Each structure stands twice: as C-alpha cells, then as structure tokens.
Amino acid sequence: DAGVIQSPRHEVTEMGQEVTLRCKPISGHDYLFWYRQTMMRGLELLIYFNNNVPIDDSGMPEDRFSAKMPNASFSTLKIQPSEPRDSAVYFCASSLVRKNTEAFFGQGTRLTVV
Amino acid sequence: ILNVEQSPQSLHVQEGDSTNFTCSFPSSNFYALHWYRWETAKSPEALFVMTLNGDEKKKGRISATLNTKEGYSYLYIKGSQPEDSATYLCAFISNFGNEKLTFGTGTRLTIIP
Picture 1 (cartoon, rainbow over the protein chains, first blue to last red):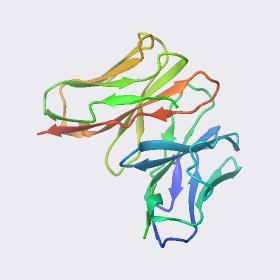
Picture 2: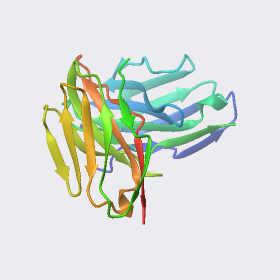
Picture 3: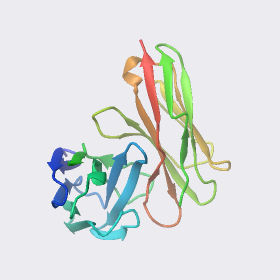
C-alpha cells in the first residue's frame, strides 16, 4: 500500500476562495482523521470518520469548514470562504478499527491563504 | 477537553548523550497512549502504542514507559544521534468508546553533533 495520500501538497489561494483538500486512506482502514497543525496549537483534531460516517466534528473551527467521506477510499476537507488565519498544514490520517493500533499520516497539505 | 501535556517543549542534547522527556495525560478513563516521531517536512510516524500500566516498550535506542495510575509516560533515547532530531508527540485515547487521538504539543529534540 502506498500509505495515506493527500493532495495537493501545497496550496496557495486568495482570501475568499474555496479550497478543497483531498485524502485517500490506507485500504482497509476504518477510521479517517483530519488534523490541522499550527505553531500555536500543535496538532488539533478537526473531524474524524468511522466507516465513512462523521463521528466527532467538534474540532471544526466554524461553518466555513466542512468534510465529507463519500466512500471508504476518499475524503475531502473544504474551506469556503478561506481566510488568512486558515493557513496551516492539514494532515489526514487513517487507522484500523482497534483502538490500540497506530494512526498512519499522510504527507500533509500546506495551505497558504493570502 | 482532554489535557495532554508534554515537557519540555524543546531540548538540545549533545550527540552521544542520553535524554528523556515526559507526556502527561488524564489518569482516569485511560485506554491507550501513542508515541509518534515527526521529522521536519515529513509526517508523524508511530513509535509505540502502549495500553497497560507498567508497559515498557523498546525500539533500538528508544524506549518508553507508561504509568496510567498517575497519568504519565516517559520516552528515553540512549546515545543520541543526529538522526534522532525530530519532534516527539504523544497522543492519548480515552475509553469513552471512540478512537479520538488527542495529541500533546510535542517535544522538539535537536541533537548537536
């Protein structure tokens, strides 16, 4: 397996534009997590899915953020409209159903909103 | 809100020296603790998954211990090498019935050659 694949690796966009980040989890993994990394807050969980169903979205900063998982092999995180304070590295991770197995992270998407 | 704290925030260690750092987490409702290593410009990679009080795990020169009663875990690196330079993250999972990993803010380790 190629691991968790995220795209794009880098995104620069203007304030107010819609941004869509994509993630392909490891095949067979039941859980998918979206994290945001900032200098101030470290790695913070935005939302996670179990079997394609959103379980906890309490970390989503506001209504401008939305995430979907239409099938087991694909998820998107959308920001509309984007703001400069959304600039961060966004990571996707996946794991197996058992809680004592590790999460596998993608390479991240570095988002810059100007 | 689950409080997972790591200390120190950053650390500079001479090559060849040994070092350790701490992860503190809620001692109630413990299920598992993970340690991850995060090199610059890469993604976090798992080092250890620990679930039992008193667990001690080892991978090469790196080892970790777990005390769930008092809510802490130590990560040890013996004979530090330049390639050990990274941020080390711990992540806590509670037994509330979900898979939510709550991360600490990490310890940034720099090995001085």
